Figure 1 (cartoon, one colour):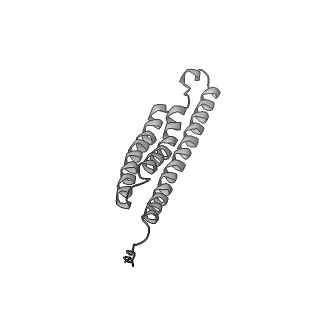
Figure 2 (cartoon, one colour; figure 1 turned 180 degrees about the horizontal axis):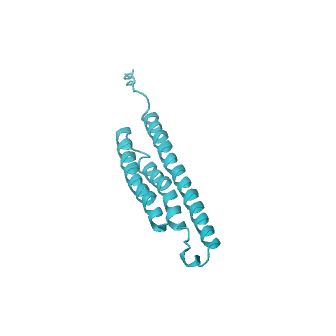
Figure 3 (cartoon, rainbow, N blue to C red; figure 1 turned 90 degrees about the horizontal axis):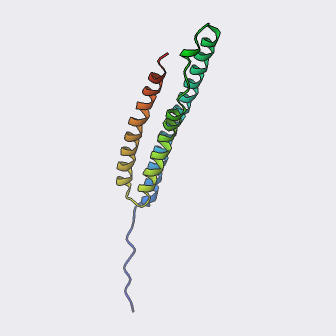
Length: 126
């Protein structure tokens, strides 16, 4: 006769907690990406309107500006890249570690994102 030990009761799966963290931070990173796309549209429209105004005046061609596409695309890419890196880093971590890594990733992405949000309009100096 073999003795079996009763199965230890476990709480909810750690995966559920991590899924909640991933979903919440996914929404935050998605919001950051949507704001970046809005910035791209606003800046490109402003540059086009400014250049159109200069074309309607005499001698304004030398003042025309080009849209800083590289910076605007980098601004859009920051949030998805930070999310994917944090997701990869936490794929086998405990929930507390997952929260910590996502907080650091969100803070780092936020710093870069905000810097670019403020830097791009200064590049244009209308």
